[in-house]
Image 1 (cartoon, one colour):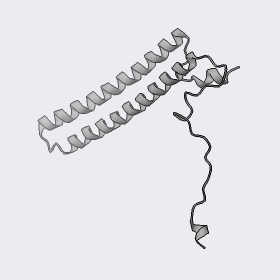
Image 2 (cartoon, helix red, strand yellow):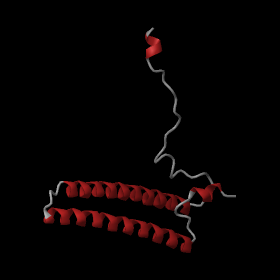
Image 3 (tube, one colour):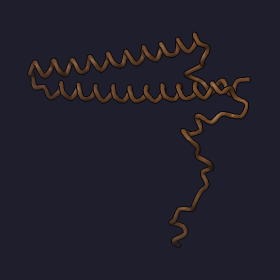
Image 4 (spheres, one colour):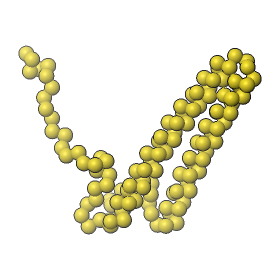
Length: 119
C-alpha cells in the first residue's frame, strides 16, 4: 500500500553547468563560448531589469493611491513612475545597441545557438 504513495526515483540524466549553455560540441569555434556567455548574461540582466521596472511601477502606483491628495506625495509617486519608464526605455535602447554592435562585429549575440546548429 505504501509503495503506491511513495515517489519512485527517476534518473534525470546529467545536469551540467548553466543548463549546458557553455558546453560546446567538439570542433566548435572557441569564441562561441564567449558569445554564449555574453548572450546568457544580457538575457539574464534584461529579465532582472524588467522585473525591477514592474516592481518600481507597482510601488509608484501604490504611492499615488496612498497619497491622499497630498501634492508632495503625488509628485514623488509621479516621479517614481516616470523614472521607471525612463529606465525601461534605457534598457530597451541598450538591448538594441548591443544587437547592432553584435551585427557590426559579426556576432550573433541574441541567437548564438544558431551558429552551432546552422550548417
